[in-house]
Amino acid sequence: MTDITQIQEPEYDAILRQAVAVIDRTRAMVATAVCSAIGMTHWEIGKLLHDRKVESKHGSGVVNRLSYDLKQRYPQMGVSPRNLWDMKKFYERFCNSDSKLRQAVAVIPWGHILTLMRKFGEDDKAILYYALEITSKGWNRELLSSAISLKMHMRKDELSDNNFEQTLPATQAMFANEVFRSGYNLGFLGVKDPILETELEVRLVEKVKQFLLELGKGFTYIGNQYVLEYNGKRSKVDMLFFHRGLHCLVAIDLKIGEFKPEYAGKMNYYLSLLDRLERREDENRSIGIILCAEKDRVEVELALEDMGKPIGVADYQLIVPQEELKKIVADEMEAFGDELSRNQKSVDEIS
Image (tube, rainbow, N blue to C red; front, side, top):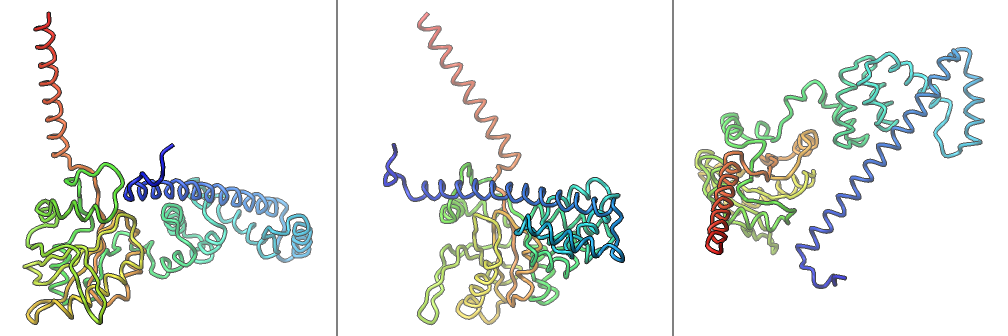
């Protein structure tokens, strides 16, 4: 048995991250299965009330009595009269809908279903959009309500990864949108296993020339773990650059996981420090880029909505670019061929 004290900290962190990922994945599967079972229950009860032609005008007594009797048997289950009527509405709303829509709403939480029915009525496209987003992104009720208020279903192709238009002059905002991408490929790092943010940063520093090429033209590397000291406290920016065209400092914050709204607040603080301590009078406002493994664009837009500093969020891929992959494969095949030739020569000599 391996002694835990013999495992290095980065190795243990990798084990912990993988274990957490397994548990989170399993919990998500269980939650989906539970929602599906509950949805089926609500569907069947709604169908029963529909088939029995229980209507609100004359069936309130039946529904009230049914609610009372069900509560006696299942006290923890939501079977209030109002909920029973909602089950009937649920069945009647989707019983003749497209199978794709029925399957989509069948696996989302009941409260989400009621919200979508109330907000969108007979709009199948809107309900399908939000149902799929709830399933894939794990939106809670609050995030769903925010997305609906922002009318995300009407502008799903227009979601922004930054707030440049709100925080920069029009010309500079347009240029910044041309300079910064929504995603970057870091395949040149050769990462094959899970790594820590510090290791990701070290590898980028080691191959900063390749990183500059990936970022695009005009970037000058200043340093990593750049110290900003103010009011007796020290903060460190993961990587700091200067862009000649934008004529401003660019701070990059590296994250190995998915984007979280609190990252925007942290970057906003870094940019305040940079503008106060490092920015020269002839330079434009500093810009921050949060570089993370994944991002939910709805969460990004909501997080950046009220930020006062120009911030963008980009994701990255650690896969090897296709041309580089071809070269690696070719080199490996050539090396393998040389090894076969040497082995064959040795066999011939022995013979």
